[in-house]
Length: 250
Image (cartoon, rainbow, N blue to C red; front, side, top):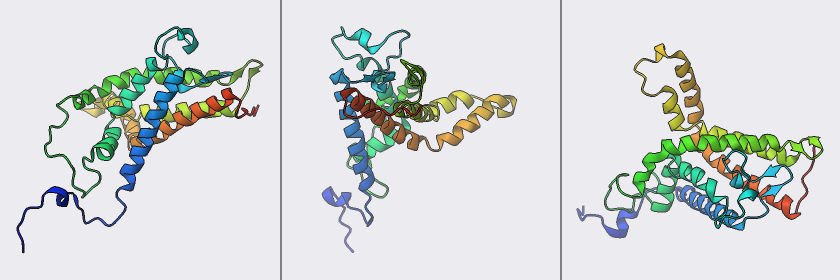
C-alpha cells in the first residue's frame, strides 16, 4: 500500500456520493442575490411606499423621521438602517456557518476537505468583528420595534381602518423578523446567562427556557425572515409602480 501523502487537488476529494454541494450552492445564490437586491433597492430611492405600506428597507429607526424627509441626503436613507440588520445577520452564528461553508469553502460540507491551509479563528480582521454580534442585537431591537409600528400603520388607510393583502404581508414579515431576532443567542444569554443558580431566578429561567425552544430553529427563522423582507419590498414596489393592485379584504 502506498504511503504517499495526499496533496493538492487530491486532498479536496471526498467519498461522499450524495449531492452535498446543493446546500452551499443554494446559500451562495440566496445570500448573493438578496445582497445585490438590497443594494439596488437602497440606491433606487423610489417605489418604496404605497398608501400606508412602507418597505422594510426604508423604515428609519428614528422617531418622527420618514425616509422622504431625508431625500436631501447625498446617500440613500435606506443606508441609515440597512447596516444594522446587515451587521446583525453577518455576525449571526447560523449565517456565519452558512457563508463560511458556501463562500469560503471552510469546509463546504461534512467530510469534505476545506481549502484553507492555516486557521486563525476569528482573531484577525475582518472576522474579529463577529464578536460585535450581541451589540448588533441591541441595535436590531429598536429596528424591529419600528417595523411593528409600520405594520400596525399598514392597517390604517385614508378612509380608516382596513385590511389589505399588503397589511397582512407586512404583519407576517415583522412576525418572522421578531422570531429571528428574539431566538438569538444574544437574547438567550441576556435572559439566562451569568446565573450560578437558576432556581433563585425563576422568571429569568422561564424566559430562558422559552427562548431556548425557539432558538433551536434560529437558522430557519433567519432564512424565512430574509425571504419575507424581500417579498414585502417586492409587493410594495409592484403596487407603487402600478404593476399590481392591492386587494382590500376589509
